[in-house]
Length: 433
Image (cartoon, rainbow, N blue to C red):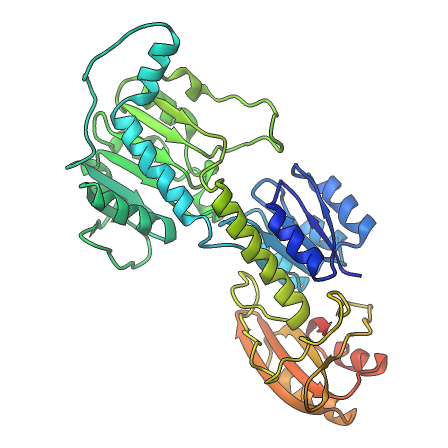
């Protein structure tokens, strides 16, 4: 039976869906460190792993866990997984690039309004039993300039809503992006920072972005501007932000992500930013609405299942993308009884495989991940021909150093047939469905 392990309070809809497909699902509320994760995966022969942002799937974890077939990041980012090592081990990685966009966008907009109206500071005064009714340093957002750093899925949607509120929107991105509405692209970060009354970061988690927003960029921001980071904690220098807030250069900030975060809800946490009055601090909840978490749970769990049963790598972040829904017409694998009947074949391991049934013939699906070298497809077909296995349908995708081919063959695959495919030079992993 296929086993899944879901960590970090992933929405119950994910476990419910996988269980409904015959998969044995274990869940845990918190994150796991390397040793804990290796122990859990190896002890239970886990095939599917679901994580959010805290659990790190490192090269060491992947090396120690040969049963692992796919990792689902129930989040936007995937920087918590060593994608290169996962690809080399034939472990597909999926995420949810769009499911919590609306939730993050709404929090960004609410933070901008609250900071410009100095809501955190006024709230603190009331909690301190002081009545401080004043309009000093409070502003409408209408007519102010919002600078968006990173104009991807979330940044571009923030742009639309901010403009609807009457803000002037400028953005900067290292990639060429189409401006939405009346937003204006800036030629440099410096140009954006000099004119923005509010700056919000929506930068991805690539390693080169570590500490990218520090003293240099904070010093370029306008006097009394506000700053938001709801993207990645490690991209800003928290001490530099603290210094510019403490000095009065910046009038406020909203921070939802931090360089180092606790593994579980209820753990102790501290940051120097708690000393500043007009600051909004939230515990990495930008995408944590019930609507978003349910959507993420549904999306990623379906991706994991589609890969397990059909070999579908569509939207995988580390594999050649192949949508195999139409490869065999009526769909090999769709008729396989229980999920997990198929087997992933790594070095030295053979899975018996499940055979899907169609109206015309009994089909077996071979998912073959290999190094992207000339002639491997021909070698695969030669092996199948030598075994008298007739190819019904076939589809190939390559990306970088990897190639991925799905082949539907008529008949029953023996262990000898599977071993012959496994022995093809350049094979990374074989998945029999």
